[in-house]
Length: 109
Length: 113
Image 1 (cartoon, helix red, strand yellow):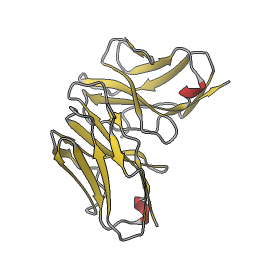
Image 2 (cartoon, rainbow over the protein chains, first blue to last red):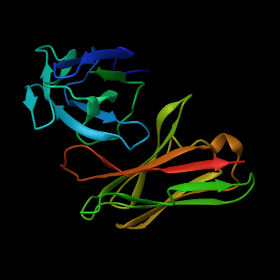
Image 3 (cartoon, rainbow over the protein chains, first blue to last red):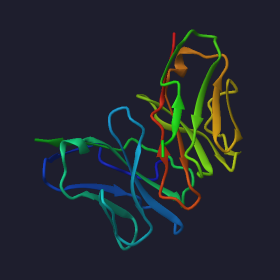
Image 4 (tube, each protein chain N blue to C red):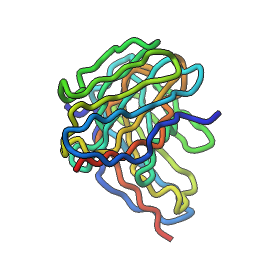
């Protein structure tokens, strides 16, 4: 049973912001939202995580709705190297991560 | 910091042979995870360890699969006997108890012919 729902694919123009949505309507109070990405056959790479407040780091921003039922990962200025599959995961803090199908983001010139 | 180190990077073996995949987690990380990735099934969690102790092996597909973590710096995933349907990329990941997510290795691409 999938805990998250993500669009299968998205496109974004190079230099523009990429906004990747994720629905997690059954999230529990102690579960965090994690984002990872996987660039073509490499190991997944951790991006960011949050509980209920918005978070920002050098890679991205994470916006979580007040009811915590959905979130958006924002890549502020997408580059061609951001083309990857992006996974949204809900999990207790650093507990086992179950990956779904993710969103395939294609950044176009 | 060399990251999570997996070996070998590629393995081709014949059906029925024993295969051993190896993983060295990042020093200081106390959790270790084994994943398998295929086109059909995506990324599947096979087993994970906390402080060298197996916590959840419910993802291990069959008794042919076994995993060990004899110390904090080494883990193995063994398949015996191997079958063509075991062909996949196997990833190892490690994490701190209060860390920011997992760090994955580069994976081992296993082909069983």
